[in-house]
Amino acid sequence: MVRVEKQSRRLYVLDTNVLIHDPSALFQFDEHDVVIPMTVLEELDKHKNGNKEIAHTARQISRTLSDLTADVTPQEILRGIPLPPSMNGAGNLHFLSGHVDQSDACADNRILAETRSLSARCQDASVILVTKDINLRIKAAALGMAVEDYLTDRAFTDSDAMIEGVKLFHEAGHDGQGVWDDMQVDVTVTREHHRTFYELSGQMPKDWYPGMLIADCDGDDGASFEAIVRELEYDYARLEVLQNYRNERSAWGVNAHDSRQNFALNLLMDDSVDMVSIAGSAGTGKTYMTLAAAFEQTLEKKRFERIIFTRAPIAMGEEIGFLPGTEEEKMSPWMGAFHDNMDNLLRKEGEGTSAWNEEATRAWIGNRVQIRSPSFMRGRTLSDTFLIIDEAQNLTPKQLKGLLTRAGANTKVVLLGNVGQIDTPYLTANTCGLAVAVQRFSSWPHASHVTLKCVERSRLALVAEELL
Image 1 (cartoon, helix red, strand yellow):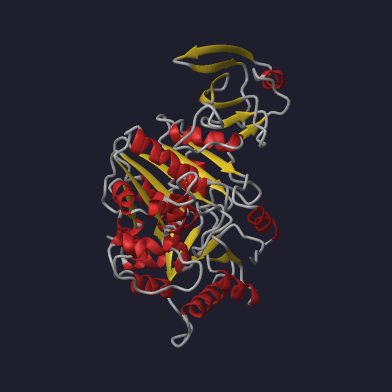
Image 2 (tube, rainbow, N blue to C red):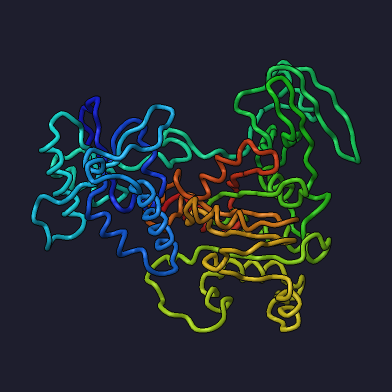
């Protein structure tokens, strides 16, 4: 980025990808003016046709601009269209027509020429180009132009990290005594329906939030104290001791190996938690534990009627082109993680083979397990469903919102992903759908998040994650 000393009057020139990324970007610049080049309008017009998400967004932006320009005279458009006021005031919307002959240039070069022409005409203002395109920012920097990334949509700043969902207090006893000594609170222990609760009175830590894990360690040896924050106020908190999924109980035969995995299984099996987000690097058991919990609650406990597994069909390398067949057959190349975990969960002990390979087992589970593409979720209502959204870091916040709002009665949604592996253009670790969902739902008591760290695959996978 190239920054200049900003004057009191600023003109922010928006690139096409900023509006596509966030249709509300027009209203995010407080009292400063927003400028849209004619080239951007032409690019939006090219994207408006079709049923893809980018076409829906382009049409939404066009409708917004149409509403802003309705009942406005040409003279008012030239002076600037007032934008709706925000907390810091309101600026004006301007349309920038090309004053330089760039008819044969690419769209990026035309936007650069138009922005430079605006800077020459407005010497009393700071003209700043805002774009998500890294190459366009490099071009602008090479020309000495003021350019910035669009950062308003970040779930948290670069100096922060996505919450892990875990708070560790070392050297705590079985009753959590070390935790309470540090906090200086009054503790009351109660039991309800075979569950143990800790009620705390006193000033609560500022970094606590509902749905987080309180533990004394997260190693393989296990923690002596593990509890989830159920209720939280300024001077009161109610913690529930976790169920033990290491050896006392299991989900579809799957046990936890450390505190974070035990916490994840508790969340996946908890009826009061409607949305669970699980992050972690490759091999930490995200999909494996989630499918095990889904089978346990759908096939054994009959709490849900079906399991829906979906993920963004983003290729890691070259696209493989058109795929024939049904929706499930088209999604099959992206469902390797699903099939691998099915093999492991249905493996016959002692025989070394998987029941998933048997036709009868496939038919039995196939009636309850569905593989769906997120592209065809619009307008659906999913009731009595265990919905698994894999690779959620490759979804934009708007796409993830479209999936989460499909949840009907008695539906649990699980988000899986790794913000270190993002394949979608213009998304980063703090703007992707997974990061935004984790941050926005952190204060809601019916949602919870955990970041797994223990790699369960092999020593090769563990070393590869660290070295490559």
